[in-house]
Amino acid sequence: MDEALEPSFESYPSFSAFFNRRLRDDARPISTAEIVSPADGIVLHYGPVEEGRIEYVKGHDYDVKEFLGPDAHLEQKRGQTQLYQMVIYLAPGNYHGFHSPTNWTASQQIHHPGLLLSVKPSVLDQIPHLFCLNERVVLNGRWKHGFFSMSAVAATNVGDISIEADPTLKTNVKRRLRNAAADGVKWSTFSMNHSYTPGQRVGDFRLGSTIVLPQMENITLLV
Image 1: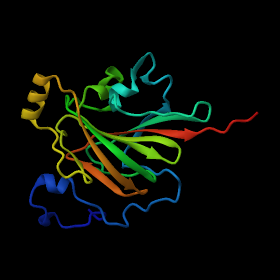
Image 2: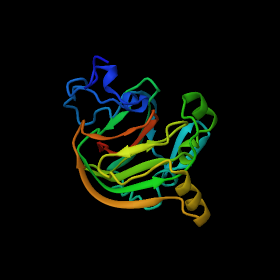
Image 3: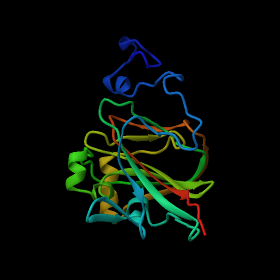
């Protein structure tokens, strides 16, 4: 509570409001590094995207476009850049806001209705394809090296994802999920043009979940 913007328990009207309490501006100093952590949590996995596929557990991989959405434009300059991805797990005790890790511009938001399976590491080890099954909000765009994406993945009891750039976004709506399933709709796309700076607040989870970051990273060629 000594990090909270409002340090008094009595000031919160509900447990939900307390759980999503905001932090003081000086509680998380932002590094001058080119990429900073987008959230409190544990890095579960990091590595290159090989031939358009992500491998979380050896022998079990999935198509990156299945996770991000088929409209994601993953342009790469062959031999100059390579796509990398990182998974950060937010436990129930973590601060549940998530922030921009670098300077980039989001041009597309894709909401994927889905399941709310647990994203605990022990579960992910058994179901590495889980990220493609759970409800999630994907922000696709670009940074100075090319494609950049930031995704918030919902989980058990944590289906409500808030994105500050889109106050109209509604997630974890059972009626909407039923209608989408009946109509064969797997996602909804929203065009945007929102620039972010390192440490800028992007949104939050209502009781915790996971962040996935695929991005282009420069590769130096020695000849």
